[in-house]
Structures are given as structure tokens and as C-alpha cells.
Length: 111
Image (cartoon, rainbow, N blue to C red; front, side, top):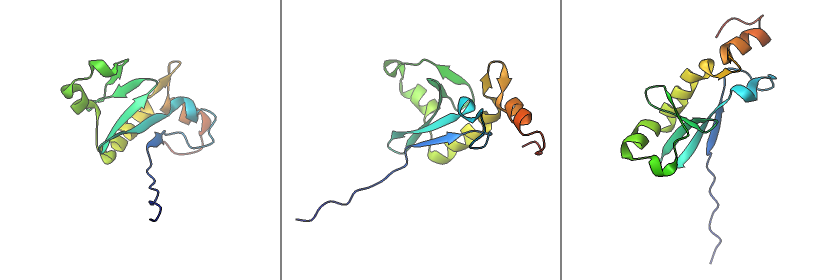
């Protein structure tokens, strides 16, 4: 009997308007995580982004009904689009990712 073939699958993406190597990039990152069956979640520090663009804080697995899941799980393209749209607006210590970008990349045109 032959050995089964190993499969590989990407399960997480990091989304940020700050480029890799930027000193502030990791604190402003949004994560798109695979949740199974073709569904992805947009997360940041335990919060989950909904289809309406608002973050649900601290929702526990037992509090998630079908309606909640329908609003917070997406196909990959939709999840990445929502994360990209939210990325400039991530706030850390009162400053947005867009503020941090302008501070560390003043010579580059605004994105």
C-alpha cells in the first residue's frame, strides 16, 4: 500500500496598510482565519468583524447562533475585502493605522 499524499492549506492571512518591516505593522494587523467548510473570520485581539463593519467583542463559542455566524463568517474573497476596508481604521492608543502610516512614511502618497 502506498503512503497517502500530504495536503497543504493556508489557514491565516495578516492584513495591514503598514508594510512588512514597519515598526508599527504588528500592532495594527487584522487577521483573516480559516474556520472550516470554506468559511473565514476577520479577527483582531479576540474581536470578530461582522458583515456590517462592526466588531463583536468577546463573543464566546456558546453564544454564537446561526444568525451570528451568518454575519461573521465569509468566503475568502469577502473576508479579505472586509479586512482591507477595516485596516486603515484600526485604532491603537488613540491613533489609526492610517495615522501611523503617514507618520512613518511621510514621503509616500496617501493610500
